[in-house]
Image (tube, rainbow, N blue to C red; front, side):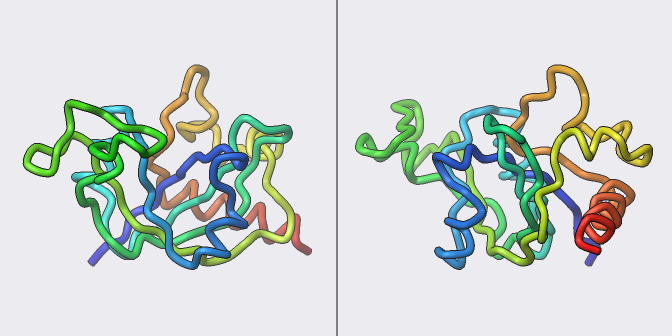
Length: 157
């Protein structure tokens, strides 16, 4: 089975890589964008690997990696009115939103900042680096995944 690669964005004030490490396994819930939902529901599978990106902080950066340990399933927080992101259109009988479970894999010794990523030629087409790219769940090519890991190795050396 071929595994795929993804980038998940999170505001560290809401959920950080440290939180993921502490929790062990986390439900990647609360995604309320249809394009990202479709990826969570239809494309992201157990065994896929994830770049964990801290957004809306300075500096924004890839912090480490994670692995998907459960493929897409209905995001029950959508029908929980006490959750941080309820959606009255979603229900157990007719779920609108989906989530996956991820587990931390490796923290990079140094965060790979957005500016560092922009300087890597092999990442010039990476969705994260495109103007206006705000999607919180994004595909990453194998070449981009490898380039990020080469950069992490250079920074860690």
